[in-house]
Length: 186
Image (tube, rainbow, N blue to C red; front, side, top):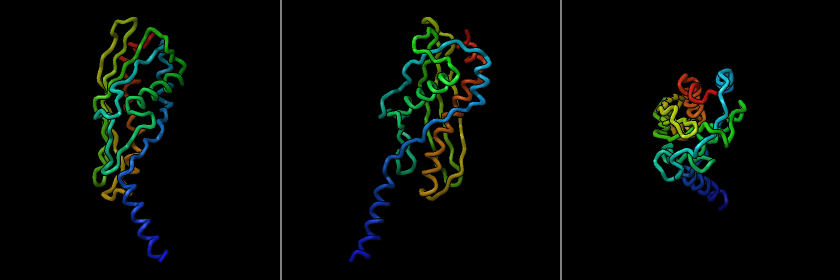
């Protein structure tokens, strides 16, 4: 009897976890980009709470077919803010009391698993103010591509693994922008 129940129990576990939420992997910095940013001698910067913070907001909901990708930070806006904080701390310019403040608002946040190739798209509006005066307001966009598959068993983990690379690609755009560099400069 046990031999008959084991395959059935395994099938139930596989079918029920197919819709289970998955956590986005941790963000990892692009040190080459950070080294270039550090050579520009940016001034100290603080971060304003990234928007929108509500986990139910559309940009904080990433679907990977029937699975839902969740941020380990509670929302993808917080994931982005945590990535910014880590990067800026890495080059020793993050200071929560600094008069220069960076605000980020996620406008687009999508992973499309595709059939053979998957893509990720992210758009973020970044605003930099110093002592209440706006120095920059600009929208940055990034796209990534990754190998995918029609089979969810391959495509879903590929989309999950692609998320931190998408955030890294977006921040690479921000840090390389001369207008951003000037806005956070001394």
